[in-house]
Image (tube, helix red, strand yellow):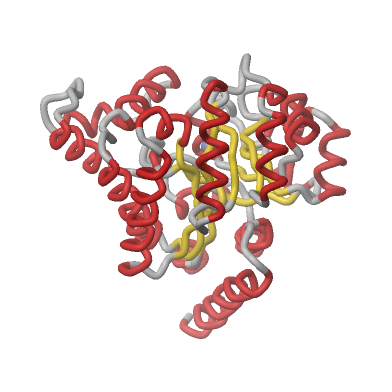
Length: 340
Ligand SMILES: [Zn+2]
């Protein structure tokens, strides 16, 4: 048992659903606020760290807004990208596909500034750390007016090798996917891979809409799929990847704290799920904690390896690169079993 827990912790991991802004530490935001003279509702770092901790949904939205408001200059953006590399490496994540809240960025910076800053942050990160990261700018549903600017940014970044996809996040309620159909079809035509958060705050109909309106290749959260047998069948038959973030769902009250997480039912129904953190710093979690949570809810070590491998296969990297990560996992498993 203890050996298995250590193995889960040390296992190299792959993550497909994580927001860079939600993985940035309160310390980093605090120092940016100081540098850029942004007023926070706290006098010192200790108070800010306390404030930063998750309490409820409205507070989470406030913290998110306040945190990103400290990013005032292109160099700040470069810094949070570089810090994200450090964070992923510290958490034993060998590859990730990460979201950037582009609806916010295009309101603050020019495209060229954004792309140069991201490129610089990526280069710094790649020079210092071994972890590999691909970026997906996302449109916030509740800011539909930003979508053409974000699309322009995504296409420009894609052509320069900075981005791999386009995402849809933000408030699911009141902002249906059909507001974004043209944007996503243009993104797809260009070669961008497309993903959307759906079936988190709204039921299975929202997942159907993301599939039918946007032709998405992966579903973020998607846990409400269990409420619709036909959808479960569709997701199983197509092996549509679903990016599951258990702690995020518990914190936001999407799943009640007294219930077992529905990922059990999803996996038992043959769905292609992966394990993710969503906004780890804001939800006080990390990827190992997510794996351990599922282990405590009855997932076997073998199943956890499989969920990790699902993330490799559901990523947008090419076949050879996928093989490389499978090999790293194979080697880890072999060496680990030899050690103990
Ligand atoms: Zn998310």
